[in-house]
Image (tube, rainbow, N blue to C red; front, side, top):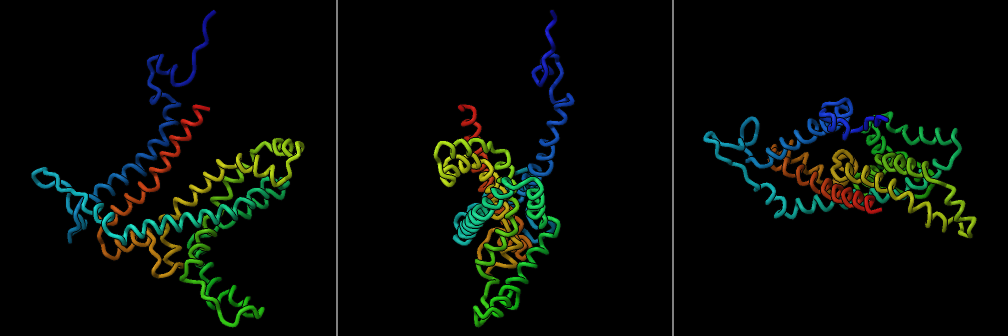
Length: 308
């Protein structure tokens, strides 16, 4: 009896046909091509600029190799970033703001995702639409709307004054409070949707079994639901933390003028000071700060799953 031909990459290699030139290989190669063109190539260009020196010319940075082919780059900008307390403070403050905002979105988003996952199908669809409704409007418009609501003459202060709860408007704009509110509000859907996807696939019979065995609802939640929803929490935290770290628009429009965020510093260095080399170094270090821990985490998770 003839054996059935094997399928998959091994078979294509065995038959002498390269996997990457087969139909499956072409489909699998599209994401790699996308990453190469839109991530690796721009990153290489930015890294190359970060090694140059600023000059008054167009473009405003020196060539990396001289006319005789000698290498003229240096890591001076990176040394400056680590030696200058202002840059270190901007990085640390950005990570702090992003971490607090991620925690706030998790505390708000988890109950919302839980309610959506446990709702009836019709109500669930309506709630999901409500979560995604902000995406139908411009990001900039939403931040402007928040700015209007939290202004001294805005909706919140007007309501509190009319109710007699305050005698004078509360200053909310240009404070850390407005900054956290803006980031948490803007990125809340990115926390809710991965959490909902995880909770919606959860085997709720496990929770019922725990309750049948004597667990109270809150204890069944802590022992069963919460641990099983950790992947959704991690995915949501990454989707909020990474863009919040380099956020520029919200700190610029809602935060205090002295709030040190690396996104604002990058903008000022690039467009106001026109120091492309230092701005490129800021961007490269920010990217490495975010990507390297994620890569380490992914590798650790892959090894843990292999051992399991």
